[in-house]
Length: 269
Image 1 (spheres, rainbow, N blue to C red):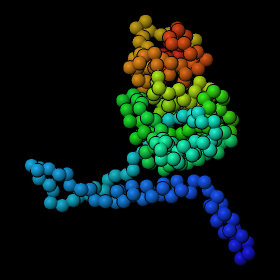
Image 2: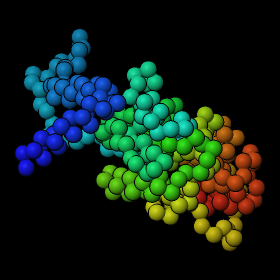
Image 3: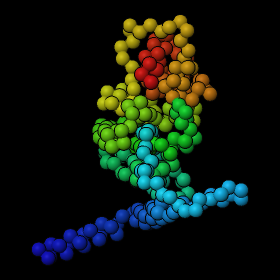
Image 4: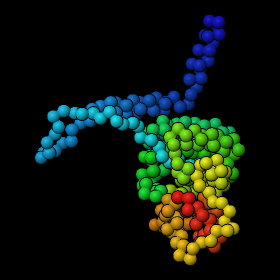
């Protein structure tokens, strides 16, 4: 038994020694420790010349950690899962995500969900302009020019189910990078099966539109804005909507049938 235990320990040590991310893992722990020290520190008084400062500090007992409220899905466009892991563990890249899902379905959890990853960049969804501060970022190993693999989508659905129930994330708040940054980003590409996600409770989708009647005064831009799209660039907003809900059509305008889809979808928000 002792012999087996020794072999196990040696194997474990060898596995750790081979970990190519040992250095970045050490840096991760250092940064987390620094944040923990910041949280433990007593808040300093606000410096002011003419405003009196309280005689003592009164720490509230009613608080908790910030909770993620959105999930933003990306594709990596790096052609290999290892390349993405390397990018996210390199300081110079200045980008990261909470999760990376490889083509074989394996999930790499790279950052505590309560911490702020750098995955969304400049973007907006509804009135939220700092997406990173309220979201979880998921990167799928995909070039953007290929279908997503079955194991990868299975892993994604399992992960989304966990996140939805763990943080009580609303159905409508499962979105893509291209949704929050129209004109700048296109991921997770027109190959991504948003209809399948919606069927499992992650994101909205439209129903049978054959009996839908679009009102004469229907305003497409208002409907896009109601869903969450930034319509400052109206053409980019239309293209982002189509990439998500009508991926087979990449034209810059909405025909009558597509307006029915927009009308139906916007009614769910």
